[in-house]
Length: 123
Image (tube, rainbow, N blue to C red; front, side, top):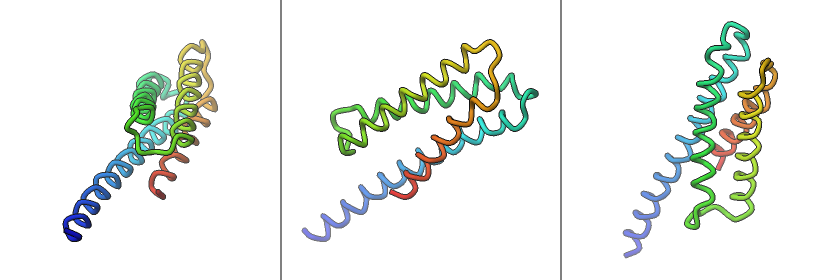
């Protein structure tokens, strides 16, 4: 019986670990895409909307998963992620609506994605 419990725990740990790794990789991908746009500005302007849309979709999924009742995360962590997600949504909207967006507006999105990705890898 003890062996079955340990085996079940290991399987669950692998699933959670791979989920965190996948989330971290996606956040890093989004950050890299936004950083590339900033670095190649203004030639990269046409890539701005698709990159922001990808990042927004990613954060929409994160926010939806942490606000579910069955989320294993502590309430305060869930609330912090939801708050960050709302901030990112607002920043993204502001950049998309800006008639003359500036590349430095992407800095906060890149930094937050990298920080959350690092946190997921370290968990």
